[in-house]
Structure formats: structure tokens, C-alpha cells
Amino acid sequence: MKFRAWFFSFLMILLIWPFSGHTNAAAARPIEIILDGKVLLSDAPPYIKPKNNVTMVPLRVISEGLGAQVDWLGSTKTVTISKDGNTIVLRNGTTTAQVNNTAVKLDVSVEINTGRTMVPLRFVGEQLGLQVDWNSAARTITLTSPETSLPPVDKPTPVIPPVEQPSPQPPSGGNTTELRGVWISTVINLDWPTKGSYGKVEQQKEEYIKLLDEMQDMGLNAVFVQVRPTADAFYPSTLVPWSTYLTGTAGKDPGYDPLAFLIEETHRRGIQFHAWFNPFRASMNADTSKLPSNHVVHQHPDWIVKFADKLYINPGIPEARQHIIDAIMEVVNGYDIDGVHLDDYFYPSGETAASKFNDDGTMKNYNPRQLSKGDWRRDNINQFVRDLGQSIHAAKPEVSYGISPFGVWRNKASDITGSDTKAGMTAYDSTYADVRTWIRNEWIDYVTPQLYWSLTRQEVRYDILVDWWAQEVRGTNVKLYVGHSPYKIGTPEIGWQSADEIIRQLEYNERIPEVKGSIFFSAKDLKKNPLGLIPLLKSYFKS
Image (cartoon, rainbow, N blue to C red; front, side):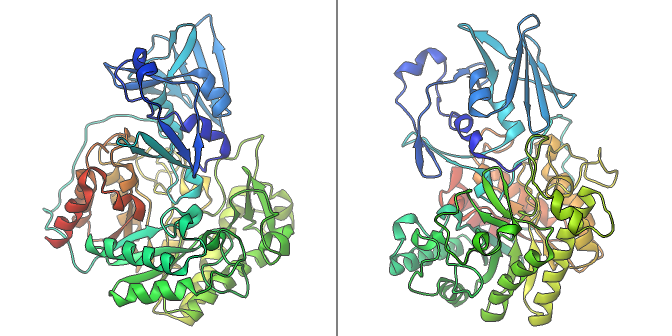
């Protein structure tokens, strides 16, 4: 699910009252909550059930903060939460919930406290997903909307069977020939450059050099740098404007060629440089007044679709797809890059009956085969993936071309050939990414599924998904790199209470011949050394 602005009030209360009982709330030092650089306040503090370590929040937060439809039936003490086609039913005194008509075990039931209906935050949060960075020393929570970063988050329906740990062969430590990459996100200045470096060329360069040194010191040998965050460029382009994330002003020349500098510094260290493009996102918000005249939203307003207060380039328009390919080929032809990398932003997920990605008119004009809406959208993306790959390989066959889709292609319940998972969204059905077709036709050189779950997260278990993706690439020339989530270390999600989780995943990868490497999201999260991850990575990669 791609998240929207109405999530923010709900997200900002997550994990912000680390005390053993709600009677201590008044004595707790206020916690500063920062959302995408803005300080937020909360007037509805949750409390923690000490025995279960579950945070409870008022139902009003769900309705007003999240924007969900909430129905409370006093006669049965039952609350129904509905949003984006998903329904959660919780009943006071009952240790199971109904999630989309599936029974799910609860640690703590909904309860009435001082006249307010309270619901378990962790449970609801796991259905919706978010990225949270908690600084216990500063008592600061930094929230980043998942819409602004690479990893989408699912809405799973947990079932807890016994964990099976396959071990075809024992792990043997790091492999020096494998790809060890890191995503460096530039959208809203997540990883590089900092906002404080706007207009300061030397500072931006120094920040990247320091970041690169830190990544190399951990044992990494490839970077995937976002050079097109929102229909813009981190390089001088004749097709798209300069990115606002370089100077704070969209279209403003930063005074140097950032991409040329990035590539030079990266290759100086013998590290691979992959140019990461977000293909269809046009703007992080619907306000076009600050976008320059040569931005696609002004040049081709007929290509633009507004959805969830963001602007997207319509993938159903052939000319729009070709425009994006042309913009990417500027980099392929003009720079000494090692690869072209796409993230999973194709069609946005999260559509409801009341909130649609409005491409009905486009479908009428560009659907000669009269395909269904889902098949037509997948065909649009298939054409884009195929045509871009052909352009890259024709110009520079040595340049690697790969895509990082959402980690679940389809659940077995929807497709018998899908993975044995219960993810709330899938690449095929939610973002219309038919990754299997890309692999079987070898339109891409590698695939990097975002496997952002632990080995003990039963409904989307890491090892099950690695095995499934390995089978998909088996017998093809498509390599499998795994996308890992160090940003989850130390969060309450199942399996992330130790940095060893990442090492166990890397060790599991060694047992699967098709896995040729890993990519970590993201650089800033590795830098934080969550729960001592850095020395573990150094030791693993040097072993």
C-alpha cells in the first residue's frame, strides 16, 4: 500500500510512550515527533499493557487520524475498521480478530478504558505498515511516509505455524564475488544530499564522499543512487528539470554535474554505480506552482493523473512511456554507469471505490485488444519494461538493467503458482507488475524483490519467499539479488529485535545458488548501526 497524508496523525503516536503503565504518561518527558522534517504534536497518548507489551490507542485516532471508517456497535462491543477495501473486526473480550473475513490471533483485545474504546496499535499497525526511526536518547521519533521511500509495506494476515529452516548446505561466510549493494535515496533528501547542503557544492560532495567511505568500510561494493526521484534529474537534462532535492528549488542549476561527480567518486573506489530511476512518479504533492515550466506536469498535463494528493505520469499513454525511456537513455548514453535500476512505482496501490486512479479515458483510447483493466495495466507496464530494456541493451549491452518489485508476486490463495504467503498486497495485483513475464522473457538482467520480512514472520516468511523467487529465475539468465530491510531492526515487528536477523538472512542466501547478492535499504539506516549491525556486517563480509 502506498501511504497518504491522512496516515500521519495515526503514525505519529506509534511507539512514543515507552512506559510500563498509562498512569505514568503525565510524568513522561514529552517526545518530539518529526514527520518528513516537520514537528508534529499528539493530544491522544496511548498506553501500554505491561503483561503483553502492547500499545493501546483510542479508536478516535483511527477514525480522525487515519481517515478510516469506524463503526462501534455497543450492544456487542464490536468495532469495525474499514479502509481501502480492507476490513478489521475487533470484539471486546475476544482474542481473535477478523481481517478480510480471516480469523487472526490477537495478543490483546479491544477494551473500554475510562469511557474510551481502545484498540491494539501493534496489530492495526501491522495491517497498515510504516517506517519509524526511534532515537531513545533524544526521545525523538522520525517518521517517513512509505510513499516517499522505496519499501512498500503489506497488510498481512498472520498465521503462526512452526518455523522450518531448510539447510541444503551449511553457510560458508561472505562471498567476495557477490553483489553487496545499498540504496541511496534522494527523494525528500532521505539519504543524500542533506537539506543543509542546498546551494553548497563542496558540502554536497563531502557528504557523498563520507557516505561512500562508510558504505565501503562495511564491505559493500555497489551503490544504487536515485537520480530521478520525481520526473526530475540529478544531472543536466534536455528533457526534465533539475531536481528540487539538490537546491531546494525545482529547476535550479546546482552549479555542477552531481551525477558525473557521483560516478567518478564511486568508481575511484572500485564500487559499482547503478543509476536508480523512479519512472512514473511526477510530484510528491499536487501543488504544481513551484514546478518549472519544463516539468512534465506543465508540458503534458494530459499525461498526469492525481491520486492520493500526488501526481503520476499515466503509464497507459504510449508517448508518456517513451518520454520516460528517453529521459533514462540520456543517462545511459551520456554517463559511464554500471546499471539502470527501477523501483516498484508503476501504478499506485491503495485504490478504493471512492478513490480511483483515473485512467478510464486512457483505457478507452489505448486498449485495442479490449483487455480487462488489470490485464491492460499490466500490459502497459510490460511494454515499458520490454522497450526500455531493448533500448539499454542496444546502446550499451554491458549496462545491467534490473527492477526491484514488491516482495510478493502473488499469494497462493490467488494463484496456485504463487508463494505460500498471505500478503495484503502483491506486485501483480496491486502495482500491476507482472514480474514473472519479465523474467521468463529475460527483458531484465536481474530482479531484486523487496523481502522486507523476517525468518519468523509466518505470513510472509523470508525463506519461503527467497525459495519462491529462486525458482522463478532458475533456468533463465536473470540474476536474483535480494532486497533487505535494516530499517526494521529494533522495531516491534516480528523478528526484528536483533541485528542478527540480517546475518541469518545472508547466511540463508548462501544456501540458494540463484541468489547472487543483496541490496540494503537504505544508507541512512545502515549508518545508524541499528543494534550493532555494522560490526556484524563487517565480520560476515570479511569471513
